[in-house]
Length: 460
Image (cartoon, rainbow, N blue to C red; front, side, top):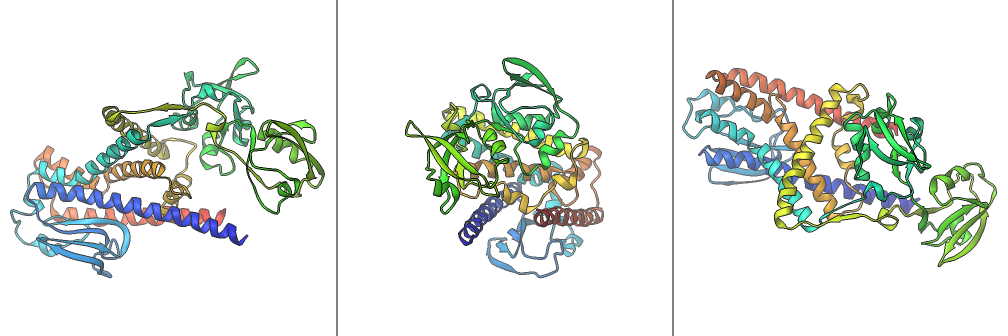
């Protein structure tokens, strides 16, 4: 138990560290986007901070830095409040709420003295950089690692289903042919396609016949909120990956790479079959038939009352199925980086839109804070996975900052577009009030989202 706790702690620490590094990098790059365009248009940048050097959003409270150094007109620093970051651009209503500066006449080096299109680029700079960062990361990943996926047609044993999938009529062993009449090519995209497209029908092949399986109302809700299953996964033979010490499986003599083919004489080539049988024989003597080094053998023991025999099966799909591998040259990786970023941005917009339009998705079940972000990272560091997740978070940051909420980049953009269309500049007083309201809304949303995470931790 003690060693399991240490493993859990180390896995959690790895997740937290990855989240911290990823967000810190992306926030710094986002702020650099604003900094770059401000300097390009000869606008003075007074501060460039990773994290806040005050208690956000109260710019006058707890003002101190972990590190700061002034170079030229700009103070570079790391704040103590580890959520976000900012650049303080001279003559602009921002997080710092520097009203004294705004009360003075505009100076040539200030943001408010620049032309509307220049101010627009300064405000969009962070979003532009976040998108470019995603493009560059995807380019690098596809260039170095290529792309690997499981073709749906190669899932030769069909699918393994969870309770939600079985509720709508899917069976273990079904082969999914299409969703809403659109042929499926990549197995891992089936579930996301069902959710994002709010699909109505799954076409399967069962015992040589084609069947239409209607997707009942409430299914998408259960897929998103479910914690015990994965709706569908490739159905795989039972091959032992690891045997825990001092367990029934260990005392029976089960070994790594053994293939379990029967339980008490009943064929169980797949885990769903083994699982259904073991539930009926808790506490009873068992005979496990396995193949070891091409030899069939029988192992005797007792099924524990908790029905945990003490072995882990291999979940490595490449062990059982042929994966498709795509390699990209430099130019191909460049093109793929742009198209993949475009697709991921579109998918995230669809996910966000569903919170407001779908009858099956509730904000209280879909929103999340830092804990939710942290959970998407694996417990063991993998560079390819880390880069792909960092690129996706960069896309999320770009989209969220584009929202037309005062205090976010998108809120400033709305005011600038109004000015460019009407020729009338929004007053500093209106900007101050709107930004204050926007920051309060952001704080409420931040507290709400992170509060949901904490509630879910205690709930489970």
